[in-house]
Length: 80
Image 1 (tube, rainbow, N blue to C red):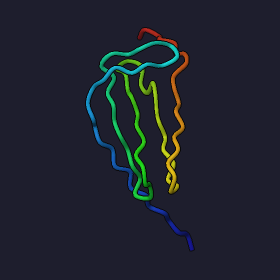
Image 2: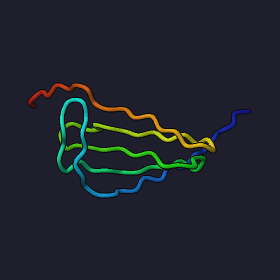
Image 3: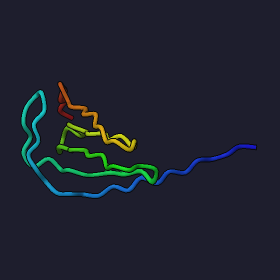
Image 4: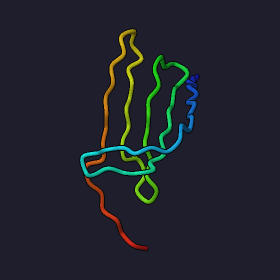
């Protein structure tokens, strides 16, 4: 018999802020936080209109918090 695992992810919009990445600084990036039901510490994501996710900080769920940061290093834009 098949089993399923459910893990709810709660996303909260925190507002707009300036965020620096290796390819530049973005003004008015939308910052969100997220937590899965099994998480102890939140993760954060910054979104830029027309590009998407430019930065994400993933937090450990361990008893001693650690963070891993992912940042956009390049992108190409195609006009449609």
